[in-house]
Amino acid sequence: MAAGAHRRQMAVFLAAALFLAAVLLLQAANAADAGVTSKYRRKLEATVDMPLDADVFRVPPGYNAPQQVHITLGDQEGTAMLVSWVTPNELGNTTVMYGGAPDRMDMQAQGIHTRYDYFNYTSGFIHHCFLKNLKHSTKYYYAMGFGHTVRAFSFTTPPKPGPDAPIKFGLIGDLGQTFDSNATLSHYEANGGDAVLYLGDLSYADHYPLHDNNRWDTWARFVERSVAYQPWIWTAGNHELDYAPEIGETAPFKPFTHRYPTPYRAAGSTEPFWYSVKLASAHVIVLASYSAYGKYTPQWTWLQDELANRVDRNATPWLIVLVHSPWYNSNSYHYMEGETMRVQFEQWVVDARADLVLAGHVHSYERSHRVSNVAYDIINGKSTPVRDPRAPVYVTIGDGGNVEGIANNFTEPQPAYSAFREASFGHATLDIKNRTHAYYAWHRNQDGAKVVADGVWITNRHWMPTNDDGDTTH
Ligand SMILES: *[C@@H]1O[C@H](CO)[C@@H](O)[C@H](O)[C@H]1NC(C)=O
Ligand SMILES: *[C@@H]1O[C@H](CO)[C@@H](O)[C@H](O)[C@H]1NC(C)=O
Ligand SMILES: *[C@@H]1O[C@H](CO)[C@@H](O)[C@H](O)[C@H]1NC(C)=O
Ligand SMILES: *[C@@H]1O[C@H](CO)[C@@H](O)[C@H](O)[C@H]1NC(C)=O
Ligand SMILES: *[C@@H]1O[C@H](CO)[C@@H](O)[C@H](O)[C@H]1NC(C)=O
Ligand SMILES: [Fe+2]
Image 1 (cartoon, rainbow, N blue to C red):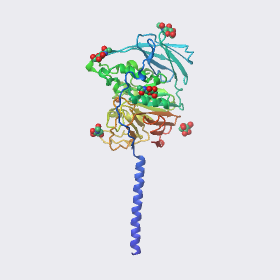
Image 2: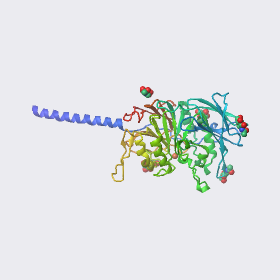
Image 3: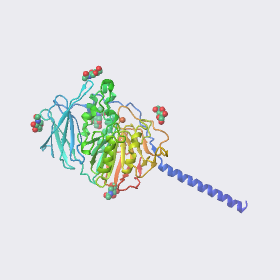
Image 4: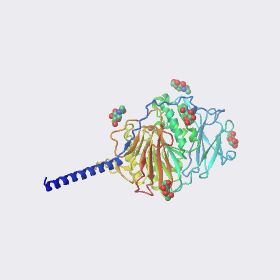
């Protein structure tokens, strides 16, 4: 073979090799970037409600004993707590006694009470009591039921809002009251958090004929073991609507609003369904998927004002948005339902450099990359989500384990915005360490509570606006 031909052959070979290497590199880069649809397959078994005589639904002993005790924040600063409970037999005493030790509950607050009818159901006596002027990061003991059966509980107030105040949130959505729900709650308890950000859909009582409101009572007895001891922040879901004109129940959210008060007035809101609270270094905004949010509506006006005038990232660097119906969801279940709200509010959330938008509704788990889809207008036609370091991470955590079962039909192929998705029940925790770092971890119920099935270090958008989030653990 002539030397010239050989050289030419070598050159062709080298070019081919270089091309191949480039292709491989590109593929590797794509693989690192591509989303993961978890290969984990849960055993598909029936998801059934725990029976009425299950241990978790047990009525506390004693005449007119307070039951369904739950607390939520009472103000924006963490110096007030709203305590609620139900007495079954008679009104009884609406006073809460509280103090710094079990034998020193020397302060008292007077509550109010309410009841409601739902078709042929009549609720017990629902008490709400506002404890105010509490100290931050302080353990309080509290008791109610004086005159008949007294029950006592305790909670620790959150730290004073401040840029480096740590806090660990539990993230739970669509819990319901099945055996799986009980596993989710047990795992959350084992992982330990300071407060729960609840993403909506509580009891699923509306799954029963006539929306059997006794299932609102059983749900509240079931979760008492956590929510009597730490505040849960409530988001309203579609299963809170209880809108049933066929049986004459036309006032939406009737059971929910009677049972679960929120501190909306302290947040300048006019309805209990959208509001905000500050917890340690987090400013948490709760939005309402099932209340009007179009331009000029009360929710729209409130959110505009909230983002412009009340969010202070120097004081509370973590901006977290809760909403029931997800804006980014690649499951065929409830596909695109959150789209109109995304169109309405996504630009604001990106401009505000929100850290996380958490949602429920879809009974599966999904976490997005930092993406936005705000370039679209009706003329330019740009409607593909793009990577955007200014944008929040979207998490769908409607996987609490309710009676409707798992949403196991993801759209294919996995869209580029989706980082990780899995059709399993579970819960997540968000462990805020300081102004720059938080560790986010999702736990599937089939594993021990400590196993992290999807974990990522999240960096704060205010203090580290261009920083990539850390590596993920699967
Ligand atoms: C629910 O979970 C708790 C705590 O793990 C357990 O004690 C209880 O027996 C469970 N109840 C049911 C009905 O599974
Ligand atoms: C309710 O209980 C509190 C605390 O024991 C007591 O001070 C108050 O007088 C009681 N109220 C009524 C109406 O019995
Ligand atoms: C309500 O009506 C349903 C259906 O007629 C019936 O099964 C149930 O026992 C009634 N409940 C009460 C409290 O009357
Ligand atoms: C799964 O979702 C696709 C749409 O993405 C739909 O066409 C299909 O019918 C669904 N399959 C099942 C079993 O629900
Ligand atoms: C914030 O927490 C992270 C994770 O624990 C740590 O690496 C970092 O050094 C902390 N930053 C400051 C300023 O303390
Ligand atoms: Fe829902």
